[in-house]
Length: 239
Ligand code: ADP
Ligand code: MG
Image (tube, rainbow, N blue to C red; front, side, top):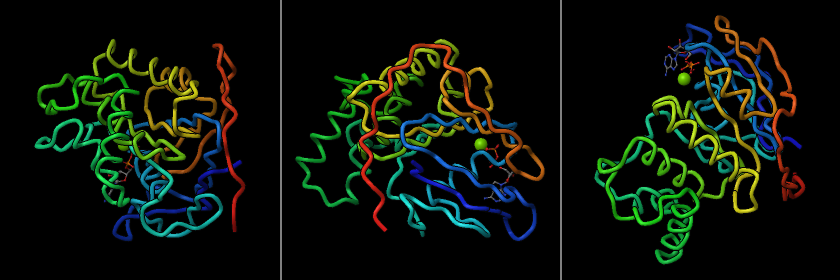
């Protein structure tokens, strides 16, 4: 079942360089999809298009069968550089995304605390980003995305700013959360230039060719590790 699709999208910036050309892609409920490609191949642009942060020059993006215009309501995003607000505490950073939803402040706080706990940052609610290690800052990044309980978690090179061991730990923890009942999302889309990371985490890998930014290859990853599949609680598409 497709959660988010791109249908024949192209993207050129300022009418010049074509970054994506005729890309049709599905992010399906229950899967971890990796978008793999060299630097400059258009991975971030494609991910941002799925999130509705970049508008395609042609073609369309759908979420649960409906075309999106503007931000995709079904996604939470995690960025390479964490993108935390330094003047806010961990709790405030995580809560921020919920403000737009008009939840009462007690409810926002309860959900933020829950997301912080889920990602292993219990006790750091009142810390500021500068007091945290890189790995912990990225945990805040995850909490901020997961607190939205989005259908899809979109991650743009989320581990590449971390040292090797920290990255490996966080990857492992994320994958065990993914297979647990506590994890709120139904699909993950991971952008990476790291083949090993893609193979270790993804069920399916889509390789982007640079110049002219099209899908070069699509492959399923053989099950090399025990993987507990949650049955995604996916409701039917309403149209
Ligand atoms: P990747 O994430 O695979 O490194 P990007 O999607 O960031 O690739 O970029 C693909 C190409 O699009 C690059 O050549 C980049 O310079 C260009 N690009 C990305 N965003 C913009 C933008 N906002 N304006 C102009 N060019 C851009
Ligand atoms: Mg990128």
